[in-house]
Length: 182
Image (cartoon, rainbow, N blue to C red; front, side):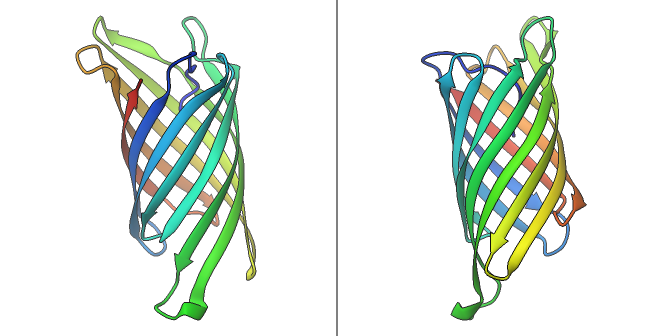
């Protein structure tokens, strides 16, 4: 759940999100995310850790804002990440699977005001993931579309809703999240 918004110096963001997996073997995951600035307005890093139907997943995703989502222009960002997934496919210890994933993609968003006290940021992203395990390599293609919503009365809190659509070897999911900027 990311938009092409800019991170400013001295401000970080913590997020909590759930993933409801709607295709294949259905499931539920929950994860915590922490985003911090690497280079003013253009480069930030998000680290995450989660569990649920997938026993453990952790990693980091860098976001480069080629065009930051600022007033008067839509945002365009590129993503690059690395993650580790631990999944028990059955109760047998021999069936435990360790996967490493390299992710890359593009993300577009545009923030705009709904009123004088609230704003919304719809976004669309394409994500390519290369999952590597002893059992072989899988290439996933997924499209994510969602919205980030905030009101001045609840700032610095923001809320997310997202759908992920499977294009190839991936899964459909519905995600909800909350973030806190500090």
